[in-house]
Length: 294
Image (cartoon, rainbow, N blue to C red):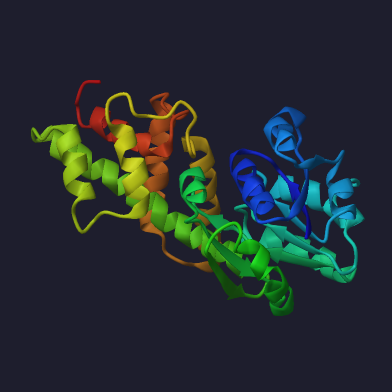
């Protein structure tokens, strides 16, 4: 199929090759073209705006930083809305507030156009392994049409329900992921303070019933010299998601005390000046707060 992709950051740059490997023709756009260089060399066609991407695509994807960016690439003067054909489908894969996603989808619907929220759960690691999962909210017939394409991105594709519900589910999953990773750092720091070597503590956790896929690839980052120079998700990016969770919880009246605690540890990381690292660096914040030296 003729596909479009708007937003070629770390995740977008990992998704596009998978779509091309499945035989699809991909046209892409990013705010800074240099990020598209390797993809263009691999066969992706460049377009000058999201509107141009949509105009030559049957299905258009976007994955950008936040709700404001989604509104810009979707509804701006040169946005996807302006170029999408009546029988085209727009899928936004960004992690944004459900109400923002629903509001954008409503504007598409008023013009007889189709938008689905289709956030992806996973990191560049799980994406490269072929283990990422996708959740989709919106028109069921449109989902049935795009599902074969989504299976090129990841093997687990779930229809969640109406517009905005996939975005809601993504925030719920990110809440769980965040709390799990923060609790991991807390547990390792507790073991260390009592005399257990860090590498021994990490190994014991990863061999225990508490192990999980996210801890399997992220946990070792806290070992000496293993923190990646380019984080999978730094403190600021992950805290953005937690702010969305906490605001959604406030609106709904849903108690999320563990999310609030995890968010406070992100504040601690920022206060200590270690926030440019992957958010698993919260372990270091626990160590320092517990009186352990660097």
